[in-house]
Length: 92
Image 1 (spheres, helix red, strand yellow):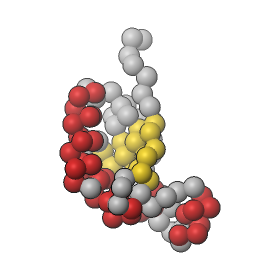
Image 2 (cartoon, rainbow, N blue to C red):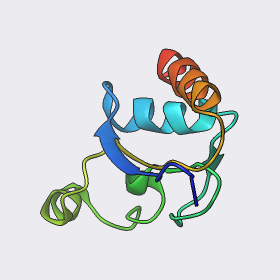
Image 3 (cartoon, helix red, strand yellow):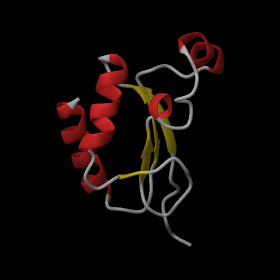
Image 4 (tube, helix red, strand yellow):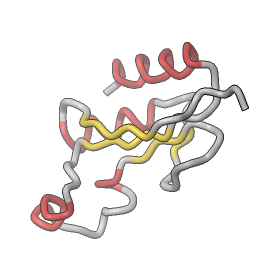
């Protein structure tokens, strides 16, 4: 196999919970899904999905900030992924 390995990235979006949610909503190529490790690129905003039942203290204890976004990078062309991320960050 000559493919390039994928990656899982976790980062915060400046502006907190609302900005993180706007970033996820603005993605066009990257699919919003809570599972990771697919061939396609996926994104998750844990504070409003997988950890939405937790209060602020519980989120902090779990190491989940309200601005946190998790990306699982898939096999799409890197320039397409970068363009999608750039436009979503601009929307956040």
